[in-house]
Image (cartoon, rainbow, N blue to C red; front, side):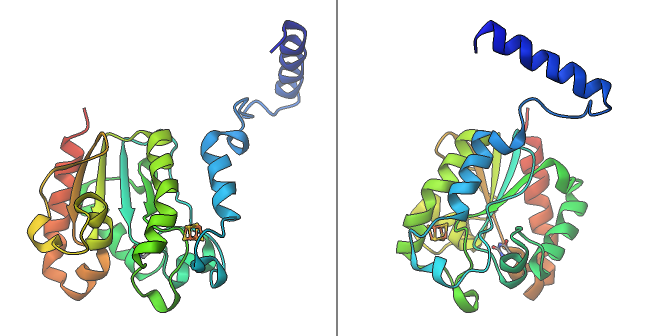
Length: 211
Ligand code: URA
Ligand code: SF4
């Protein structure tokens, strides 16, 4: 930016501060790379899921989170609100996070696909392929230290197959440059309450990976 423009901007900021707007962030979140990507996703029609969605569910959390949780796809409540894990699976995730001593506000939560598959079916492979670029860019921008892969769909990103969470849960893996830990999906935990402690253990282990 030219010096004269910079000075003008400074003047405006001083004025705003004087007026009581000191909390205004110069790097307005609305123009950050992450929110630009979010806007692109909101208008995305790359796969058939755009036809039936109410809202895209981009993700939620600090743009510099060390810890990222990747679920499968939005469900009904998420589709309604445009936010990840706000329905029954979200309530279960909250319980598990509390058991693991993790504050939801500190982590970034998103899904493999950003639009709800009708009737909560699993996303199809071509839908995942259409959407995965968004997740990869989110990862590049947020650059977390550790990612938690919830369930088989998220795990399949790493292994290329849609099975094996029972065998792979809790095992540290690499996804791109990240340490990834697969664990059970909260929907599985709701059906198998005894697995809750295991998922909390995996999350605690993930916390230990953060330097
Ligand atoms: N299940 C998911 O995988 N993601 C959500 O956001 C909600 C339910
Ligand atoms: Fe686009 Fe992903 Fe939604 Fe498909 S699921 S329309 S690729 S944002």
